[in-house]
Length: 214
Image 1: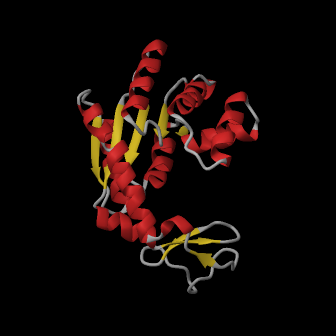
Image 2: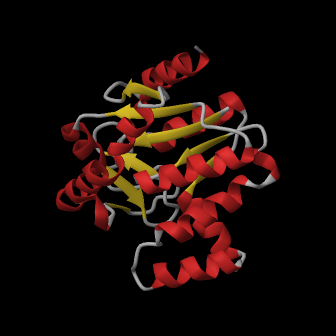
């Protein structure tokens, strides 16, 4: 099974990716993980990506596409994959389609987790992360036992710098302008499974798995 996961920041993609990965026994592939792995191993592609990231620039489409192609050639992907964070743009989607065609395979489903903007903002701005162990909490949905104190290590809980409302609105705006058009792109291929992501994580998981099993 070859799946692509779409959803704005705060839609819960990470939570659902774990469930999908376990259900279908396929690797969860995110661009962030690909970048980190290549940089850690100091591959030629990784060195190029590191240069852009260290200077605060976005990794160009061409390099991102090459990194994803390299990952999709690996042995553990032969029975399927779950792509998360790629493609982000129409050119990336077109490049992915072309590459999969070369391999004689295609995407089976595009999972679109749709969440109201107000809910996205509430979810992200309410997040609190432990400075020590990086455990994540939420002031409304998953509060710590003691205010501002991590349940696991006793560390201080803080708001990430990019989790303020202004930054969140900007991230959502970038998603709407660059990535949301992919929904129409994949709808033309009859691949999109749109899920109401405003529901509880458990309900969202149930809807996704039910839709994928059809």
